[in-house]
Image (cartoon, rainbow, N blue to C red; front, side):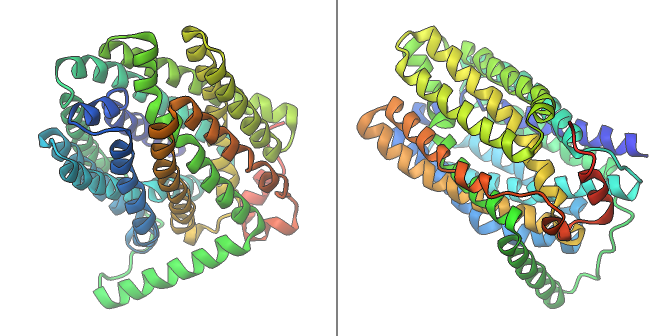
Length: 415
């Protein structure tokens, strides 16, 4: 039964990343092709991040109240609608509508899918390390992104709207698969009464926010997530126009470049376990990641030679690939099961608030001073996370929020 849950987790991870990956290598070019400048491109994405900030807590509470499976299925439905709206649109305001639908997709899935995976595995007696599962899930996710980005590059060379249609179709298939395969027999859904349901969601939200802000490890990780959200936006948003202008490559080649980005990220996931074995403490791995990411970004902007710019940019992806499995396992080890989706959603909400700030600021900086300066600014912001990571201490006092099985796992961390 554990293997079945893992197979579903990996399948949905890969297919969801495939659906989103179709537009990854052409997203900014699509928006700019419809007449948007750097600031407007970031403003469209700002609407997405701001929507997530507003929606994460209520959708997380929805998942904890009415079921994680239901939440994930609804998320896939919104993903289908978002892709279709993008496919038929050509104006800023219709792009904004598509981004709000995409934000609903992200919010309904984000905390719920992770919570469904962890609690389903616990229910079926799993006592292994979650770092391994999240790292392997990340590899499946990256594989899906690689395939989607490469295919999306070729589709975009024909018509920049076609990757959105491919994504919408894939999300619809995910909607059908999730309905058939996902189960949660341990979850006791309360009768659907509007007033009592909203009261329960409000209670779960309040309890989760209080827990997240008072627990020393969760609180510091949430602050770090905010800073990471600010820092990565200029790198995420401007690599395609930067590389296209620097290397003078065709749109179809950008898909292969995104595939390279994903491969380096997968390498980071592979090295996460080995780095933890050497550095012993998860916070040390995250500090190492911050230094590696920031250094590679700064070097890539100063090196001057086009292909070395790409090389060092790819190296920074190793650090980002190492980050996710360590971060996810650390957060989940200190989150109570009943509030898991809401607390993870709260963390995601703050992270996306940082992303919104990063989008707005980097759009202005890139428009006024150029893309390289916006990249360096992101690296400086990320370095600010180091003091917060240094405050994390994984000891018995800090683990009081864990379940007993998770405490047992904590004593057997990798390395």
